[in-house]
Length: 595
Image (tube, rainbow, N blue to C red):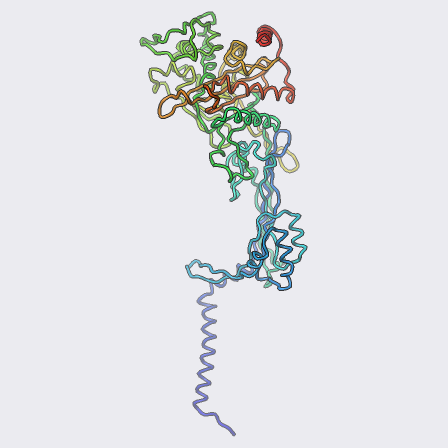
């Protein structure tokens, strides 16, 4: 019989004690000391939480043409923990399908762990269960990838915003940025309706990451966003943007804004600005090109305000069409003091009331404005919409500046009637001019016609909204007829004339303030008008900032022709009937033919 020595038994006992002590210490460390953190890891591994993204709604024009939509794409990636050596032979074909190199795929499969700091700031090594290969894979290509049957390669479906018309109506639409946020335009304005509601599902999975359907706890289906129909007409928008391209080619301006709307409803049929940008690739363009200049940029409207001034005096029954004004004098007495009158663009002598507007006399309109008291004149300018937001909707709109009477200086009464000492947006000028085309009523601009669901059922219908009555019907119609003479052969806006149609409108040329002073070399040329005068169908406004044509960029020279070009393109498309040929219309037509 062999007996073990006492020393050996003690050594064996100590070894066993160390082994079991180490095991016990490890178990205590994992199950007690690190229990909370490890349970969180287990829960993250065991639980499966899937998000089902809602599809963002479409944006269409008034005839149903698609302007913005959402397409389904696949975000393709791999789980490197599921690597199989026999799949390596397929990597080359996979690389060709998704336009990556075989080396990139090998590196993705070979990187199985990463170091991360936990909430306590301690660095830990964690398994990588997802490595993205490509973010936007078409469905057809994804089917070919899955047909390769490479274990661990799979995709997650997501939605991507797409603008089928490219840069067309970009400033109306806005865009979705890379973080999925709506920026500007209708995308932002109607985001609540377009966005929809994401769904989700919470369940458990086994050690091989397979779903255990019996442990599925909650499942909420996604709800797709509503669709938005605009008042914009795709063909009108094309005509507007083609005209902007012509203007840019001929005069190389800093910027251009054009608005086309229906006077009776306030519905905007076309709106565009230069510089353009493409919402599909918005990041390639300077951020300055993203803004909707028609509502964000202010300028001094200039001569279109003369029509507003004359209408205010007429509406107060203070205008005498038989009266004449000596426009050769440069100073007049007003309320017991001498007021210096502004210069005219060319010398005038005696002008009738109608000729003051027709020939656009600064001095004549200043003297007409002096028939009103200052507060009444100020209230009319505000009633036309200057100094407040138009209610256009999509963000970024500014209110401009109309100084209260208490802040007027000695020259305001002679400068405000000609459109200086005030600034506003192209949208404000446009809708102020619309008052004459809409029997004296100021309408609210409207870009959204209705919201509808996937079955085409209307959810919300946006009806025309009148903001206020500014002028009597008689006053509005009288000024409209005077504005038709401004576009006549003797008027300053004759280049807006359309054969067979009475066009009413007013061009403007305002000097820009550079370094605190009015510049003789920097101008804004504009035109705002409507036609046919006897039954207005369209209001068109063009604002051109610093046109470069080798001379002063008068609005009648650079902007008025744009109104004619757009109008001529839309007459047949919108079935606009010719004007009733009578009286002045016949005289204008004969004069034009002789001209």
